Image 1: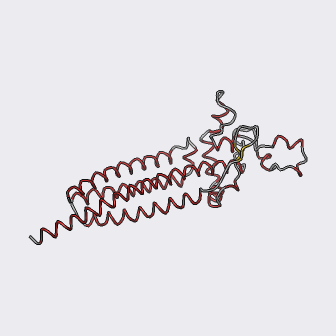
Image 2: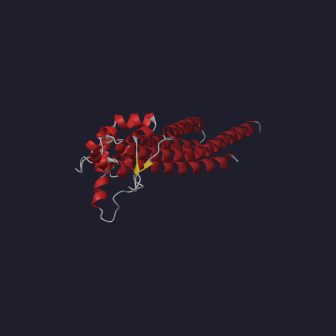
Image 3: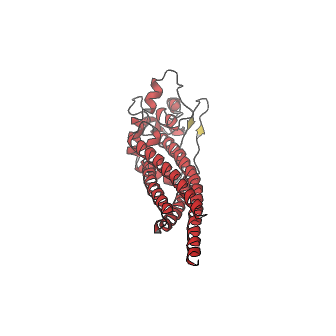
Length: 258
C-alpha cells in the first residue's frame, strides 16, 4: 500500500513539475513580449514567474520525498498546505477586486464605452499609479494602428475593450459644437484630449484607462479560475501525500514488532 501511494505521489509530482514549467514559460514570455495587451499587467507576469518557481521546487521536493522517504516528505506536505492556502487567498482577493465594472452601450455606434468609476478602487488606483507604463505598453502593442491599417476590420471591435476605450473618441464629442458646453453631459476634457495623431489618440482619456482595467479584470478572473482549479489539484496531492506518510509509518511500526 505504501509503495502504491508513493508511486501515485511521484506521478502527481511529475504532473506538477510540467505545470510549473508551463507557468514559468508563460510568465517569462509575457514579461519579455509586449505585443499583446495581456502582457501589460506586469504584476500578473511576476506572480506567474514566482508561483511557477515555487511549484517547481515543491514538485522536485515531493518527488524526492516519495522516492526515499525522509523529512523532505513532511516538509513537502506542510509547504503544499501553505501554498494551497496562499493560492486560495489570492483567488478570493482576485474575485473581490474584479466583481464590479460594466460597460455602457453607445446607441448607434456599435461599441461599448467604458467609464473608470465603474470599477473597484484598487484597480483604479493601480492603473492610475502605473499609467505611464501601461500607456507605453498599449502603444507598443499597436492595437489602434493595426485596427486603422486593416481594411477588412470594422471601425470598432465590440470584443476589444482597449480599441473602444483608447482608439475612438469619447461618444458625444462630435455634438459639442452644436450644443452649449455648459449644458452638455459630455466630458469636454476627454474630447480635448482626443487627437487623430496615432501617438496620442485617446491614450490619456479616462475611457482608455477604464478599457485597460476591463482587460486587466478579465485576465485576473482567468488567473483566479485557474487558481481554483490548481487548488483542487493540490488537495488531491495533499491527500495522497498524507496517505504516503501514514502508510510508511504503519509499515515501519509493523516491522519493529515482528
